[in-house]
Length: 138
Image (tube, rainbow, N blue to C red; front, side):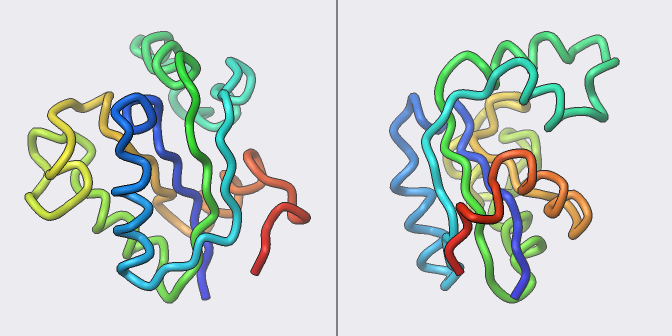
């Protein structure tokens, strides 16, 4: 079993799409082993998006992710990282295939509803940012 971090971003929460996205994960037989509704602080955003902090567009990203609550989840299952990335679709909702989360519900690059870790190393690092090991229920 592989673990990955999934974030339902502020636009997903605001648009009340959380249940629809979670249902897709469950329909795929993935396991949600940790979940919480929370606010991302600027400090937490900087830790999560460390590779983007120096980019010119980072302030806009930080304002977006800290602007409203998110749902953070640890999801596990066989090849969970690749499965979640495929389910999420292309980063830009306008280019995401129909049938993916972003293809069905997003028309934006930044407001693209979900984050899913892109590698085992990223998943491990990102999960530790949002969850303590004691919060994960296998």
